[in-house]
Length: 114
Image 1 (cartoon, rainbow, N blue to C red):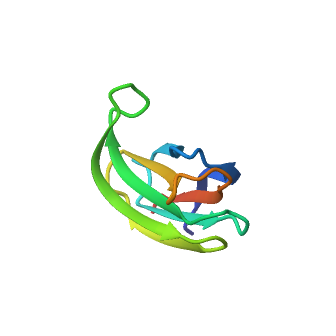
Image 2: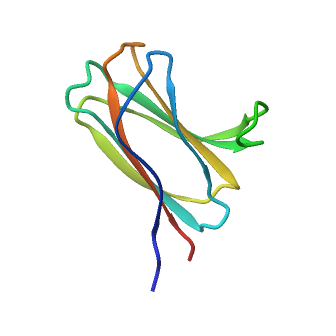
Image 3: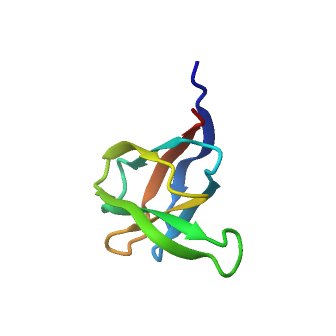
């Protein structure tokens, strides 16, 4: 039987106008990950979510290897997508599309090893 593990989550995380890193996750032990994101119903604007494969995680030298996905969510919109694991570490970040304050995001990242 497949085991799914909650790897990271956030409930109503306030988004800084300049952008917010939501999670930097080691996914090497998983075959697939499912990432769900939702823009708060009362956010004043849309948000842009980015998922990136990174190198040198957790260090000042952390850098993007490639952009795995990005999408825009209007207030009260959500998405859930599964990805084959691209490498060792992914980074999930978000910012408002108008650099506005007052946006919030809800997210989960689940990993599945088999």
